[in-house]
Image (cartoon, rainbow, N blue to C red):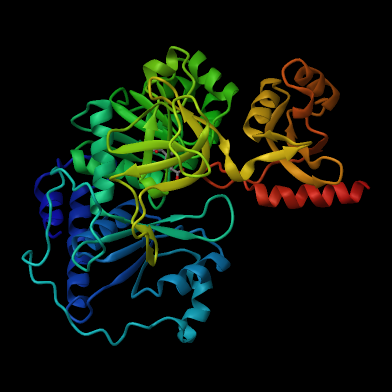
Amino acid sequence: MERLLDYLNNHIQNDWLINYNSHQLQELTQELYLELAQLLKYKSTVKIILSERETVKFLASFIAACAANCSVFLCNPDWGKQEWQQVFNLVQPDIIWGIGNWELGIENWELGIGNGEQNSTSSPLSPSSSSSPSSPSSPSSPHSPLPTPYSPLIMIPTGGSSGQIKFAIHTWETLKASVQGFVEYFQLKQVNSFCVLPLYHVSGLMQFMRSFLTGGKLAIIPFKTLDISQISNIQTSDFFISLVPTQLQRLLQNPELTNWLAQFKTVLLGGAPAWHELLEKARFNRIQLAPTYGMTETASQIATLKPDDFLNGKISSGQILPHAKIIIRNQQGQVLNYNQIGNITIQAKSLALGYYPQTWNNQDYFQVDDLGFLDEQGYLNIVGRNSDKIITGGENIYPIEIESAIRETQMVADICVIGIPDQHWGQALTALYVPNNSNTSIIEIQTQLYNKLSKFKIPKHWIPLPNLPRNTQGKINRQQLQQIATEYLQNLS
Ligand SMILES: O=C(O)CCC(=O)c1ccccc1C(=O)O
């Protein structure tokens, strides 16, 4: 993978990284690479925790780690003590690059839980001969290689909306396959990306990868600091931008930023389910929106609705990217037909090899928690998450349908529907909502719902909250809401 350095130094235009100095990036990458090469004389594998807020440092560290075939664990500098402890115990890193709260998690680790690898004998990587480098533009193999010390392992964190942090094990090949699928699907030579999502997250990292591997431009500006005066000088009609639904909602509340957004070639939307009203608003404002479906394990999107389809009124997650295949199966694993709802299973060249430190062996397909169907034209439709399913009075309900209907009333700023254990109903449909203003009336919302939904789909309990617990990706923490709702209802009775 040393060819990566050559690629960075000689094959990428100087101005690819907008607002940053590419020379500085090259120099820092070289410096860090040499540091790693030194270490690799004595150790066969080097595990790096990368927790870097600064863009150039993040990119230099990432590229250097990959060039040196290290295992790099992408981390969120803002994780709390508990998360860092979990991560240190799992990873037992040789190097920590960056800043953040990780000091908080280091206590146990220093007490000797880590440091298990000090005895590894030297296995120097001989220059280029031992590795099987592939140039960033060559086609990738259909199967991911097993992890070897001669290819970098890129661990991307995924925690879902709550609970344990896991790392999906990716390789340069799986990430490259995702970029190739993307480029083919959109019929592009180069991808210019405007990245407002964190680089340690798959949604941010893949924007870097798309630009880096295709020689496209890359602007990186944290969402929090987006401000019209700072961004209006970048010509975005040639750019992709990736947003999560809550970010899109925020931008659409500001006319200037809405105008700015409407100039993008494509606005990729992913990370969490979008609601009908949000999509309508984007369509009304002629945003070139491309709702996507994908996850950390697939190195971002594997299905995407193209902007033309979106603007023509289509609602779905779009067609499947060429590097991936989605098959809908029933509980027994049998393949279902078009328009039949079942479990979504995935095969993809971009699929992770497993969750660190385990690889998935002999697995024919990856089954996710989502339910959906493919229509005759191969468009993917997501119905809901298996684990979010609520059974009330014997009826199956997916909260997304109820949440969309409630949003359409325009009387709530945010909404989540869950099931609370109930003697009579099995589970009682419960809506946790953020009122739009002090006059928000539940009676009025319910009246509107009666015209749209069957009676059993109307929530039995309504709980107002000042805000709902969402992570930076906009994913809602349903577990926490279960707890809040249970306590709230207990206090009532
Ligand atoms: O939720 C995830 O884990 C993946 C989400 C993701 O990558 C994404 C999020 C927002 C916009 C575009 C994308 C994408 O798939 O490229």
